[in-house]
Length: 170
Image (cartoon, rainbow, N blue to C red; front, side, top):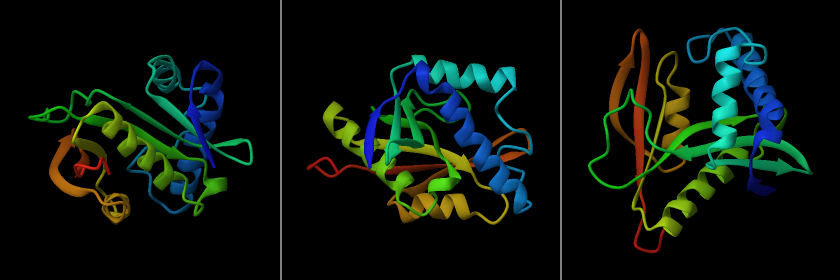
């Protein structure tokens, strides 16, 4: 697996990753996270992905030369409580479901932790959908993150999770 910087040339691939994730969730009756409609073709969502692609914090994981997942790091979203110390915030993590079970998400989170270490930041935070069966929160906990704070955006339940880096940077 290779992790490389993402850019505007990756917008279509990242939209496809979201589309595959939405289809996966819809097939399981779990539409609370991202709804039931594809990201491709939705001007608001396309614009968000374009913004991430141009912002410098996007990384793409490739498996056998194909884009398999995407992470974006940067400032915390405005709907979460600010951190009381410097942090690196995982704004989004998405995996193309064709590559599910191959460690793509963990590799991208590992890159984010390493990047925080390179920047001398001791805190990495991420937020996620905390509804339905809680599997997404459990996923991040399985990656070493701990629950920090629940929040709501309208009727959408979320959870902020965090991971502190050791002095060695991991």
